Length: 114
Length: 221
Image (cartoon, rainbow over all chains, first blue to last red; front, side):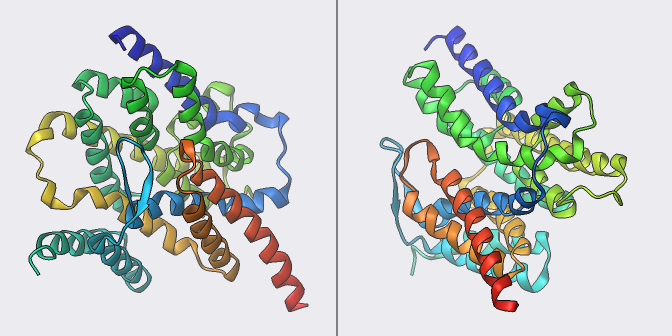
């Protein structure tokens, strides 16, 4: 793909992204979401984030076929479990992220040695 | 949002580094990340662009990966429907995953008790922070790219930041069931094309919440 085509693809992607992100916002006051639907939409982002996290923790992605295969990855798994517990106990974002990175890095360095 | 920024920043560095390593030049990476501003879909469509897939395949892939934002925009709409159209579009552009979750946890539904300006300021504060942090990660990735060692474990910071968003939101029995349904659906649908697993999990999460609310309410009567 030449330079021109690539930028054309990017511009199209920009428009597609902007349209999805602002779709219902653009409808403005003409659109009225029933209160019952509004109530349940609050469960959408958490489910989406879960679906983003799961592949990172439990799966590896084949770059050529782009398929995911399940694999025990101890650094990811133990770091995530420790992060969940730290988050529940300390309720601190920073402690959770730094603690999680520390656990992950240490396991990555030392697990192959054991 | 400031605390979350640590994870978001590392995530941005790693994502943009991955884009550079896929073979995109520095200026193309800057242009792409600024224009599109959607990390996961950028990573997903780049191989399609390099393999010279037709435009519609590339655009539809991005559309499907981003479809969760369609639902997010539906829940933002009641808060901002009074604003002029160009402002609503700008809010759409700046709406990122992390800032959205922060916003919707604080303002789940519009209420007459909320000051409209406060609500808008909170949204702008969270989403502009999100944007600035993401673009800083881009700049760091472009400038220091090759000097960042892989052993720092930065690639996992984004996932950990998402964990800190997910956990505090799961506080009711309905939310637990909804999350379990999302986990199960994600595992079952993980290899569907266009990363449809994300939207399948969202649909499962929402419908499980509806059903479980009905059942739990019946049980308590």
